[in-house]
Image (cartoon, rainbow, N blue to C red):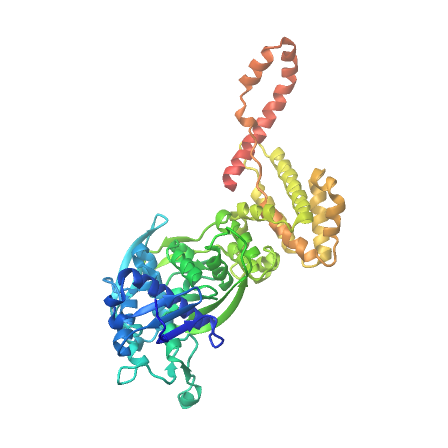
Length: 551
């Protein structure tokens, strides 16, 4: 603990002149000092009897004597390189982290914060093989000899070895986006920081979470084209932020891939768990990519802010549980692999992160904005997840009745197809599904949607779910204001329906024979019901065959 002397460096996340990036850097420094305290137990083991005091909102550093030896020791202990040539931050506790996660962080930092080769020195290109979901993939990375963080003490101190009292110049590797656009404007557009803030900014990469952006359904992983997303969280409590960061650094590798910035934001905060409601969470996401094919370095091309509500996080819990996860497949080339991301999950996540209903704009995205044309197929693969989202959504009260009526109509339409199917043939359920989906895709206005639903429901025949709730359902169909909402949910209802399995096929004829033999009078009745039982058994067989195809 620090005594009555004024600390050499004092940092507070409550200071009015800090940004989200400064506060993120302070959290990284807090994490580092917390870990170094386990390795160097007493001030006597540190240069200048270095001591620190950590609270939930502040950091105090104090030492004796010259400043440079203390800061140089601190930075070299904080920023290291391990035997594999990977960046190793003392604050991240790498001993508990899988190697594949270490490489991911190393690649992301090298291609975003460092980028230019004057901020690091490469030793060689290394490669490691990993098994991800029973598939072997290879990850290549630049093994480093040193990087700028390790030698930054000389920037913080003057020639006499004491802290600079004036502001110092900041560049983009230290503060993302701090770039001088033209050499002639260098003196005018310089970005400068206080020495203590410059020190804190060195530790920003620790608190960040790094994701890989894969906006297309199928795209080859290529180290030259990889687009990185950096999540910078708003820090309200240094200790809580550190705990969350430590828990995040060992997720499954395929979970680093996201399809949009909103998914990265929501996935980051979801990992905290849902033990109790909490305040809204705020974060900033930076997108790095090569602006064109001839570029040698990635540039910061986008910055977006998100406010994530507890409601959004709570609704998101069904997404990783019920929806198809990202999948990774190796390619013929040793250093490349294919990532298949789930774009339906991305649509839901994007809506939740922007505080919209999870099903908003489904029809428009699938039929008007989908360039590859594969989203409609993905709906069927995510049937289980869509149904789970419907069931848990308390805001769909009346629309749940509409969805049940839609499902009942599908059940009856499919049953008619089973009844018409000859023995040995496969019911044409898939073709019927595509035909209905095609009709729904042509509903561009209220009138065309009304025509479709009227024909669809009438074609199914008697519908108990519709009959019981027709007073609630009818206004949803003829609503001039909310017809787009009905159209979205009609598409989801179509995709979420799964034919039920019947068990009559598992009841043998001999069972019925033995049963009726107990009562002789029932034997005559059995002569009449046996053909009916056989018909139901045949229908059940067809249904089970279809269920296998659906699954």
